[in-house]
Amino acid sequence: MTVLDQTLDREVTIRAPRDLVFRFFTDSPRWASWWGAGSTIDARLNGDVLIRYPGGTEAVGKVLEIDPPKKIVFSYGYAKGVPIPAGESRVTIQLDAVREGTRVHVHHAFADAAVRQQHVQGWRYQLSLFSNVVSNEVHAAADATVDAWFAMWSEPRAEQRHRELDRIAASDITMQDRFSAIQGVDDVRAHLDAVQVHMPGYVLRRDGDARHCQGQVLVKWKASGEGKPSMSGTNVFQLASDGRIQSVMGFWDS
Image 1 (cartoon, rainbow, N blue to C red):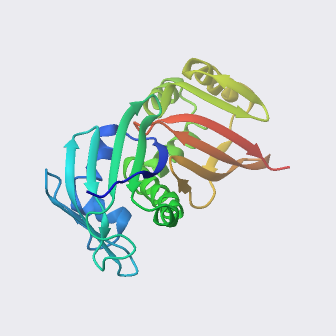
Image 2: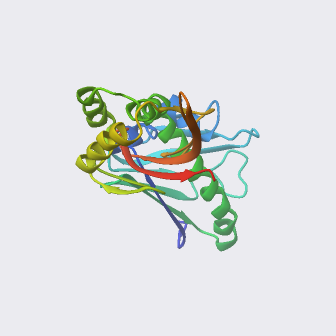
């Protein structure tokens, strides 16, 4: 029996519910979305695992253990037999529900130290890709959420502003920029009301496409009002696992 005493551990926290994250280990289209077109998984004990990398290299294996939505274990080797014969390494993926969403821990056990080292960069890349693919699905409405955030600051009706804030923001949202250091949705609500008193008539809009990366959204914005000086800046939004805005960091242009 091969001794798998060379281990590689990687971890990433994804701002998405654990049940959804686990589907990327059980649903073949989702599995393929972060490994490569044509990759498949039969997510049951002894089910086949196929990874078809974009360059055409294939890795194969069998599901050795599965405990939805907490854990999946599968063997891993290459169809061509090198650098790992089929079945000669083992991947354990543990999913833990945490406040931010889901912590994904990968434990890959090998028989050879040099082969283990060859896979370090691969897992760095693969988990980054995985986090982005999951985040893009769970935060598919991020652009609309960001647009609603900007529109809210120009909304003259208090009831509408407050209702929209409750819809798109986490209760413990934080907001920081040149003119504010805010904690909690009640504080943001009061700040919204103050803007209508001190800066009425300004319209705030997204300027260009939003850029997404692992639950973070980078957006440029512009504000203008009739007969008033225009303003611009950049916001970084951090999204919660339910798609609501968890925090906002604002940078004003000089």
